[in-house]
Amino acid sequence: MKKIFYLILMLFLSSKLVLAQECSIYIPNTVGTELHYEMTNQKGKVLGSYTQKLLSIKNKGGETIYSMLQNTMDKNSKDKVILSDTITFRCKGNEFYIDMDQYLNQKQMEAFQNMEVKITTDDLMYPPNLKPGQSLKDGSITISIEGGVMNMNMTTNIVNRKVEALENMDTPAGNFKCYKLSEEVQSKTGFVNVTIRNVMWISKDIGTIRSESYNKKGKLTGITQLVKIIK
Image 1 (tube, rainbow, N blue to C red):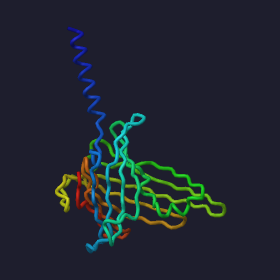
Image 2: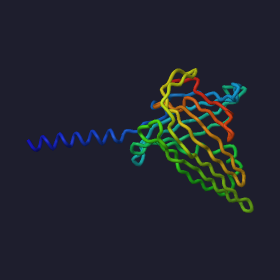
Image 3: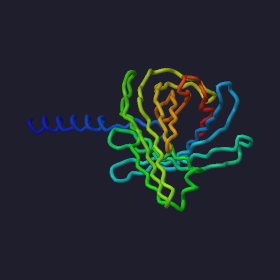
Image 4: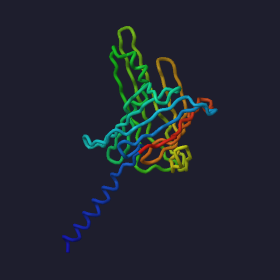
């Protein structure tokens, strides 16, 4: 009887542990899925577009690594790719992380390819269960460049991250149940400081559905929204 009791207890504890380790992801969960985004200004004028495609899901060192290919398209020709980059996401335990390397300006970094570049990141983290009113941990990326007489530091901090609400969001891609988040992006290059505020709507197993950017005066400057999903 005691053996049966302990067996039931162990099964119960094991099931609780599995549930506790569940990681909620905010990207597609099927390899090959493509997300198509359109960027506009505050008046609705199209400024550009980009796509994201999930390339792989791999287990490495106790983490699940997701790799996505992001292609930025020519605003005058949606079939012409002007920039390609791979963005990395990961699940560690029950926490979901977004690689802060996505905030690197790849075109700008090409100018420093013959210099010594050191990159330090603190990736953006999402806990397993988001709730309205919840504050999220900050993220950051610092780039130190040394090139003889030219030394430069570039820093981007994502601060004041907060879950604002749970809402439905409509875009040309459909209707989605989303978490509405807000954050401040503080960028510093040398003596130049720029701060913007982002508001975004994210959905489990898909990603960003819509995002809005505001300048330091609170004026809407740009909108990005999901316009199509290809599975």
